[in-house]
Image 1 (spheres, one colour):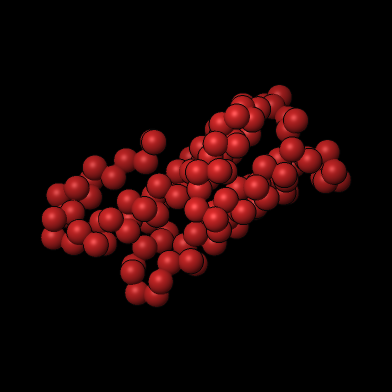
Image 2 (cartoon, rainbow, N blue to C red):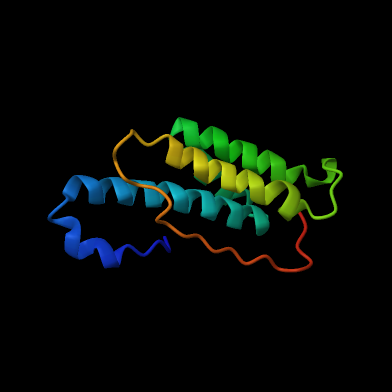
Length: 123
């Protein structure tokens, strides 16, 4: 996992429930990032493992991402990532945030960076 929450560890003891929730949210976020990465590498066993190990609601979202990526040729767009895949990933991440119970104070505080390499195409 590349999510680095070390900067929060000093506060973990003063707010253990909040820290646990942030770690859970960061873990879910990381699963989405790892799934997109595995799709781009065409690592089907890893995509399957990530989908099967996710909680049911997230698993459904990951299945949709996998289907979208694998069916890129069905979308009549010039830039598949910008027009279809990127917005779908953003939607999944937003759905994670919106599934949080009100008042927990998580969201908009995590950052994900992806590198898109020229010449990679969905397969």
